[in-house]
Length: 225
Image 1 (cartoon, rainbow, N blue to C red):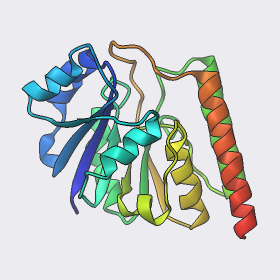
Image 2 (cartoon, rainbow, N blue to C red):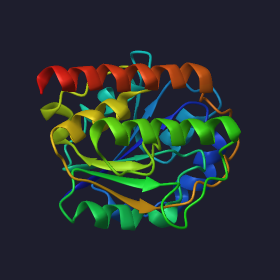
Image 3 (tube, rainbow, N blue to C red):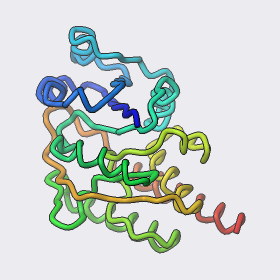
C-alpha cells in the first residue's frame, strides 16, 4: 500500500521550518504541497528542500484538495497541517490504521485521552455540535467530524464524487462515506497549539458552511433512500 502526504500551506513558514524536518519521509511514496499563494517564504522553503509543490489555481479549501489529489498516484492519502496542530507522533499509527481495511481514518482530538490545545469555547462547541449532528443523521459514532488530520483511500474521492470547493470538503466525504456504509475508524491524537502564522478558520462562516453541507447531504440521502 503506497501512502502519500498532502500538505496545504498558506503563509506557514514558521510551522514548516519546525515541523517538516521531523516528518518521517520513509513512510511516504509521495509528498505534495498545495500552496494558496504564500508570500512569507513558504514556497522558497519548499524549493530549497526540493519538496514537490503546486500553486493552487482555484479558491477554496476543497479546491486545493482536489487539485492536489489529481496529481497523486498513491493508494492512501494523509492530510496534514504544518501549522503545529497535527501531532506527528500519531502519523505512523494513522497509517497502520489504514492497513486494517478502513476507507477513512481520523486522528480524533476528542477520543479517549486526546485533547485540543487550540480550541476555544466557540470552536469546541461547534466541533461537538456538528459531530453530534452528523452522528444522529447518518447513524455513526465518530468523535471528531471536522479535524483535518486524517487519511483516506484515494479512490473514494472519485467513487463518491467528492467535488465541493469549499471548507466542508471533508464533511462531504464523511457524509457520502457514511451513506455508502464505508468503514470509518478513529485513533486519539492531541491537537497542539498553532506554531506561528495566522489562524485561517472563521467560526461563523465555516460553521454555516458545515451546517449547509450536512443538511444538503442528509436531504440527498433521504431522497435516495
